[in-house]
Length: 170
Image 1 (cartoon, rainbow, N blue to C red):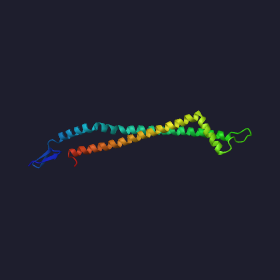
Image 2: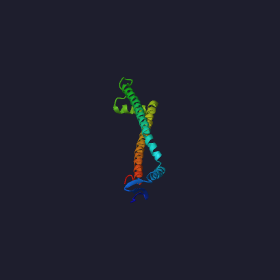
Image 3: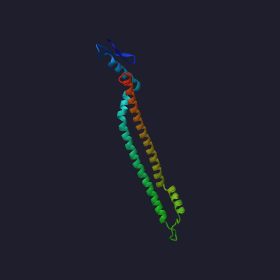
Image 4: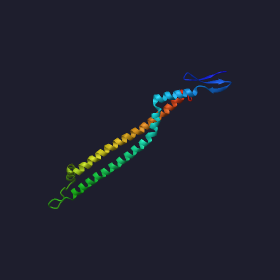
């Protein structure tokens, strides 16, 4: 008695004397694997799965470095402002009284000093640039993490498709 196991229209096994003998399954698997490999560039998927964890780690390090630089620049900006506030509060007029007697006058003077201080402007611009750089680094990290998830999903999907097409799973 001869029975054939059919996968995608291919006869893959025959039974003789109640014993199943695989006849063409290995060649079909090779053909299907080759076709899927060409169709979905499995080598690329595997390589990305290997490469992405390292790329993610490097990007995490970059995000950390940029956060540290931003914190340092913000601290410098806060120190500049504190020095300006202190100088404003200590200034005296010709009569020896505070030059800026109320909060409104002190705030106005602080704004004026910030606007005219090149050091303040440079540091504020640096903070802005570092914030932008951090945002970009975080966006790139998210992109890499999303790519890794997608590639893992694609690898799993392709694995299941291969197994389904070869009849290993139904």
